[in-house]
Length: 308
Image (cartoon, rainbow, N blue to C red; front, side):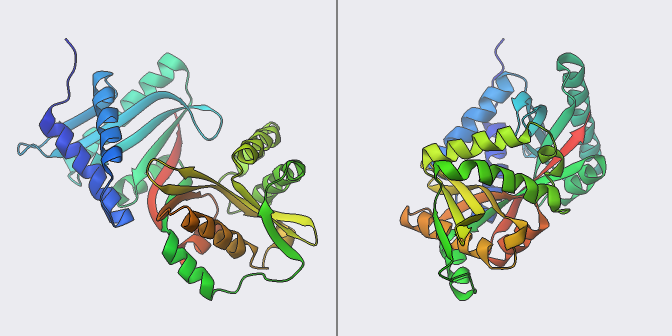
């Protein structure tokens, strides 16, 4: 018998996620986003990757959406929980944590996966506190409003000397960008990606990343006295009309000159031209987080990595 998600449960699941979206973006989810989410939930339930429990009134007490095996940003196969929610009621909290642990260990035994990534809504303080003790915060998803960010940056002092130029990425920039970004993370004690960039193969991986940005023509490079000082890479989500910040860094020897602000300003001007009202990105260092908050970006989700 094929598993079918009930209309009542589906409606409540969609409401939980859409309420979070509206809180963060200050606007309702688009029709296409709701449709994609509906399909995702229905497929996950059919494949037994969606677990939930309802209260007597039909509302959701908790739900967990699993992806048993995915390629994660860390270039490693990781058991992932892409959506989850739990009411702040002890008996449901206990069930919620127990189910996550049981499914994670089952996946570890069956597939040999050693880590779990759990993506939590920023407002779920109890889960964030719980998993901060079990694992390691990897990154924080941030959401910003393009027009507001530009407004703030227009009042900020940014580097404007003739020796500093910002332009689109070129083939000859790639090798140096990979080297500088890797070193930037390795030398920044606040970076949550130091372990990733310390791996020998990380330089090759980031070179491939920049080659993809070059193909898309979606990376700005800042240079001082013709020396590469940093970059900001991005993607455009045409379907939902949003910008996505893929990476940003400024090499250590050029920090303190206002180059990060200059890169953000250039990028937001690009997003504004493309009529992208909001943009997403992730903070992996406290420095990025501090500047992001200054230009009005708000924390949407937190991702924790837990060893199984």
